[in-house]
Image (tube, rainbow, N blue to C red; front, top):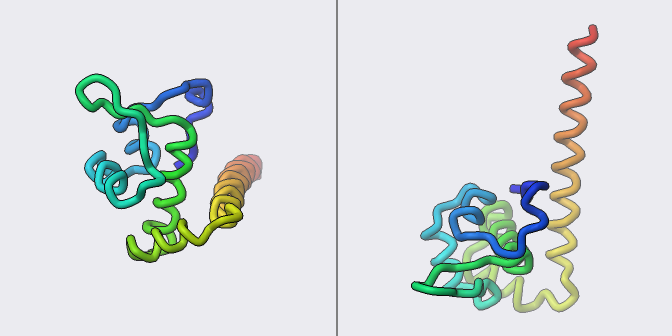
Amino acid sequence: MALNKNKDLKMYYSISEVAQMFNVAETLLRYWEKEFPNICPQKVGRGVRQYTKDDIEQVRLVYHLVKERGMTLQGARDAIKHNKKGETNRQIEVIEKLKDIRTDLQEISKHLNELV
């Protein structure tokens, strides 16, 4: 779910790239776009969506609330609406960092086991 480090320099991402980042269908992203006003990628010629990093963070927030925490769409909308201080965004950042740390620790453990 983390952004590819090589793509961090990109300004815009396609809907297929964003769908791949979160391992969800493009149709789900379009549906969330209708359900959550905070997800609003720019549309260019023939309705092609271009997601910025901010758009992706909004998708990450909805993904976290709906897919990881199991909230209903209404519950997620309410959480976003009442999230004035960005507390949920900070929680997601912490979770992402912890996932990265876990991956690093698993890699270290694997290398240590190979030495034994």
